[in-house]
Length: 634
Image (tube, rainbow, N blue to C red; front, side, top):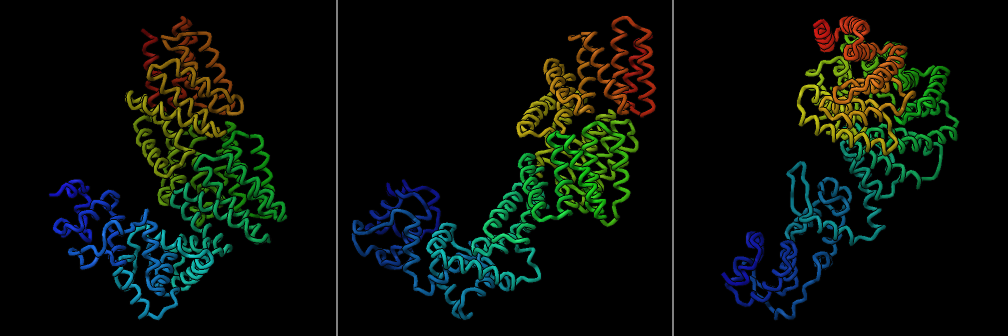
């Protein structure tokens, strides 16, 4: 092997280049070979050889080329782009025009589509394609009847397309839209991405907005929120260039509402509110009561996620009044669902049960998978709110029935946000009851769903719940991993101003820390969880109970602090019917009084806790209470 050959990268020696079989035996090629190998790029080398053959600097046939001029006289273009542009320019005019037309179609070129826009007889078109294949610009990738061609290299496509004048590109893109609409008129839904692309570049703005919206909604439906956001934002951008009319204002309104669930899923709640405020102004400009009602309803859920609960109730009540005045059942159901959220955040669990039950009863059977403008169908969303409210009330049997039905309804949608909210409710229910093994399997599936679907809003809750359950099951190492991840996720979302589940998440993480013996961290997280008192009284009651348990820990025993926290938790929990928390606080007070020697008080609180656990069928906690009772009689 010659020194030059030895220096040649192995992958280049292995490629089927135009000259590798004979160059070692033709001394005249050695200087050229040395010149080209220094460039090092296989694609560059191949294009150089083709250029030298086309310009007759190399003569002969593949495998037996010879130089026709001194190597010093050969001008090799400095870049592969320049070389490709020169090769394209040397094509016969009709072939160059066909190649450029093909580049506007895309890197992959369906024959039927090219045929519709090329303005060539079939025979001439096929001969031209044969010549472009022979010149190795294109190659065939499909067979009749789905005949298709592809550019040999992405760079070839890029350079060819870049050589077209802007006006010619625009004209061809517009014609491609017409051709697709004609060729695939019965299956346009399968071609929306291509239609959107060509409509934008063809400056067919009204069609571009239409197809961009369709692509965005398809992406949202397949749980690709980042893609959906890009397409819908692009639709808004294109719409700004369209002359204003009632139709464009209505489109601008609808796209902003379509963006809201996408932005919510991504945790971009402030951006969602910004878009909705713009939609409110559009509804006012259109003087459209129905649109006023819809945007008010949806603003309600965004305000819920931002913790602005008083304003959420005002806005939701306004939307409900509009729905009743218009006799709009869709708007009424949607608004009631979001009012459920506001009452749930306020710890008004009995009211949530009442509203959600009535809303589900009013929901027509054939609307079971209708989203009605929500991020999930009310058939699932209302049940999820029902589950977590019933669980807080200690009505676990009813909650379990609704949780199972929510999952059954959500799974067929294959929509990550919808499935995620069903598992969110189940993943909240079972830790509250103390069904740790069942909770673990549900929560792990919940995490998988929201990770895969990029449901940023629910991931912190899922990971925090997992940390608590794993710690309860004694899996310390994995619990610690989830604990660290969960706190990062909660803080990241909080930095965006999103308070959804924040205090409950801090509580769950604090529980994990307590079980892992990380008492300082548990106290810090418990303190964070009560920061929202009294605007989020439900999670605050749980957090105060956690702080009471921390204060009764042997390594942090503080009787006064423990009693204060338990009493504060009871003051929040009892008026709201939060019977599990009430029972837990009585158990905690029993342990506290047992340690301080107040045995009569200890027995009273323990009896209360035991009775309540038995009534709610909280078996794990009943066993804890009975063990405490047995310990106290020794």
